[in-house]
Structure formats: structure tokens, C-alpha cells
Length: 80
Figure (cartoon, rainbow, N blue to C red):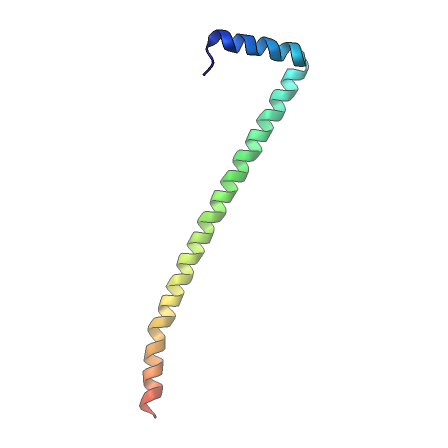
């Protein structure tokens, strides 16, 4: 990890390369990119959580269907 003098040297090089007017525009673009990335990650996490909830609800419905099927089949076999 760079120390204090290294950060000063890096800042001077960036200032020389891009100039004082361009640096705020670059920082704004970087901040916007980070914000969009975090938003996309959060939306992806929400989608994953929603899908897992749907799967657990589907499993509960399937379990209820399985419980009712044996009773129906036993009633059908008694008539045979």
C-alpha cells in the first residue's frame, strides 16, 4: 500500500497528465460508475432472494399436492 509521499507523487503525476479542469470530470465519471455498479449488484441480490423465495413456495405447494395424491389413489384402488 502506498505511503504518504507515494500518494503525493501519484497526485502530481495525475495533475500533470490530465490538468486541473479534467480531474473533476474524471472523478464524477468514476463516482457514477461505482454507483451504477452498486445498484446493479443490489438488484441482482434482490432477484436471487426473490427466486429463492419462489422456489420455497413452490416446494410447499408440491408437498401439499403429494400429501393429497395418495389419498386419492387409495380411493380409486378400493373400487377395483
